[in-house]
Length: 61
Image 1 (spheres, rainbow, N blue to C red):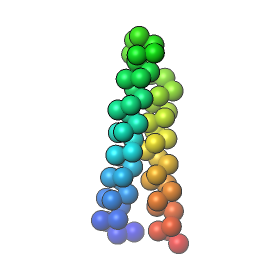
Image 2 (tube, helix red, strand yellow; image 1 turned 90 degrees about the horizontal axis):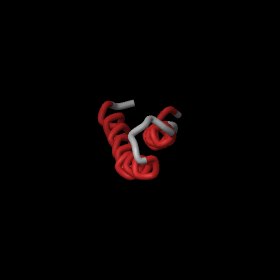
Image 3 (spheres, rainbow, N blue to C red; image 1 turned 120 degrees about the horizontal axis):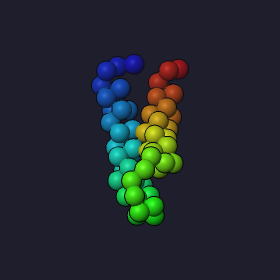
Image 4 (cartoon, rainbow, N blue to C red; image 1 turned 90 degrees about the vertical axis):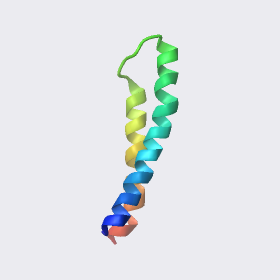
């Protein structure tokens, strides 16, 4: 896989994870009333990994 394609795939995955983090972490904090490591961090991880894996799969053919 070419280097610029990897940069694009990682960039899209990072933006996806950042958008979910921007929404999910403050929402969970407001619901709980205190900062903790909970399921919202798994949501951020999934939002990062899912686009990266899905978009990089066709390039492996």
